[in-house]
Image 1 (tube, rainbow, N blue to C red):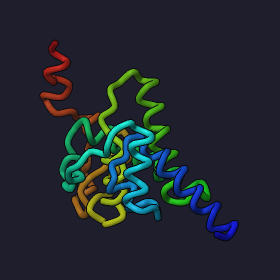
Image 2 (image 1 turned 180 degrees about the vertical axis):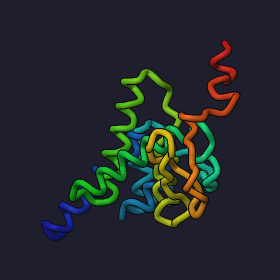
Image 3 (image 1 turned 90 degrees about the vertical axis):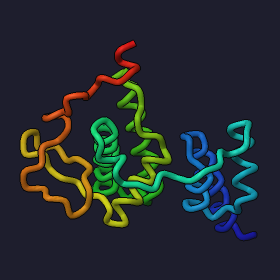
Length: 174
């Protein structure tokens, strides 16, 4: 094995470990690394102490435009977008940095995280596939996740105009 391929292999393993620690599902690992499925399952078991969860990944863009998920998705995607535009990071490295910053911000605000790593990854993929776009709120001028090709000229975000049931979850009432 050449020096370059050994370094690349080590980078792939480190990336996989980092993604697993952040909560990545196996499908995310398979897409973002060049490691075999067998190797990824072994790594997952080493890092998490259990087999990776089974099941499908989120596949609907609708979740990202509902009130609370939209606030968190918009925060994360704006961080990701900023890192992408202002650094020389590779896409996946920018993604990991953005997700860590999102988690840090949520912890500082003492708020329950809404956006898991797999959903954040799916969000980025939906933007890359032109299923989602950022709309600017006409009141606060923040940029928020919206369905692609949806009208943006009179857009008002869920922070400036929260729905009547906003924040009235079962957990909040207890």
